[in-house]
Image (cartoon, rainbow, N blue to C red; front, side, top):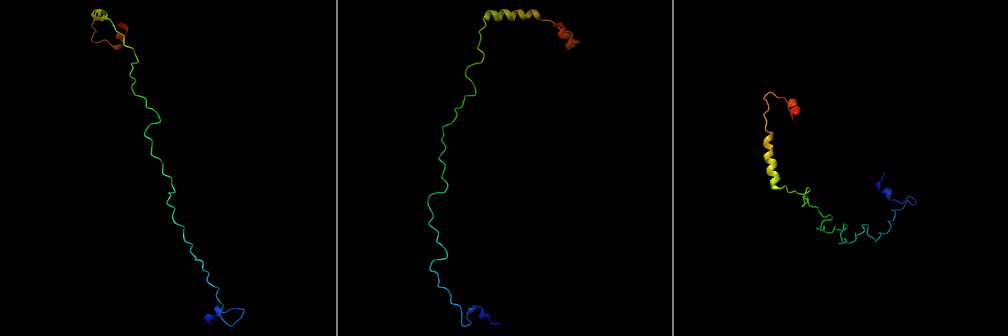
Length: 101
């Protein structure tokens, strides 16, 4: 079988099929120039001022107001403690101490 037969026009066995004219438009479409604007909008810089004002950890004012005790009261109470000196026997258990005091 002759390999040139496939080029022949089946309607007329006289000669090869004429080719269509070449289209002048290019096969590859050129890409448009790259847009210089970025696709992702950059985020603005972070504002250094805090959103929440921090509270101090230690409150400067005392929770309990100090009360002054007169010196004479302290001295007399301190001297009165000497009256409560006592001795505990060596074999005394804790249960017995609770009942004693």
